[in-house]
Length: 253
Image (cartoon, rainbow, N blue to C red):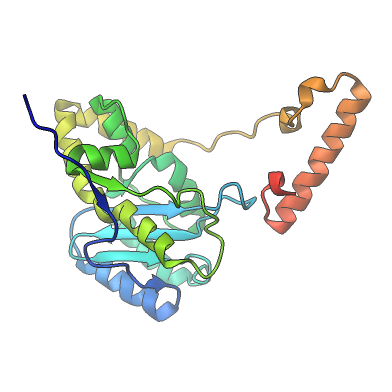
C-alpha cells in the first residue's frame, strides 16, 4: 500500500512577494528581466467580476524561468503602448502558459497582449483524464502543495491592493511552468491532439451576445402580462446603461 503524502500550504512565492509594477520604469525593468529568461512564459490575470461592469484585467501575473515573477498593475500602465507592445513581442515569440485560457485571453488582448501559441493547463489536464482540473487541485496532485483560495472573489479593482492579495495572485503562476511540464508528460501521445485544442481556443471567435438578456432578470417567471414584460425590459436596459457608464456590475445597482 502506497503511503499518501500530506499536502503543505503554499503561502508565499519562493522569491518572496514581488513589488507591484505600477510605473513606467518598473515596467521597463520587468520586461528586460522577462526577456532575459528562457522557455515558456506563464501568465494569469485577475478581474473584478461581480464588482465591475467591464471584464478588464486589474492585475497581470507573469513568470518565466530566469526571468522572475512579476505582478503588473495594468490600470496605471494602460497608456504605455510601446512597452505593452514590447511585452507582447515576447508573448508572440514564445509559448504562453495559461490556466483556463478562454477566461483570461479576452482581458489580456484588451490590454494589448495576444499570444500566438498557448498551453492551457486546465484543458490539458482535462484531455489527460484528470477528474479535478482546477489549478489548486492540480498543484496538490503533482506537487503536494495547497493553494489558498480565500481571495479568489475579492474586488481586484480596489487600490491599493493588499499584500496578502498580491501573495495569493503571485502563487497562481509560481508553479505553472512546472505544472505545464507535468501535464505534457501525462498527455503522452495525446500531446498533438492537445496542441490542436489549444490552437482552437486561441483562434475561437468571441461569443455572440445572448438575445434578449433582460428575459433572465430575477423573478421573471412571475411576470405574466406584456405590459409588465415591457416595464422589466426598459428597467433592465436603463440599469445596464447606468452600470456601463459607471463601470459597476448591474447586480450592485
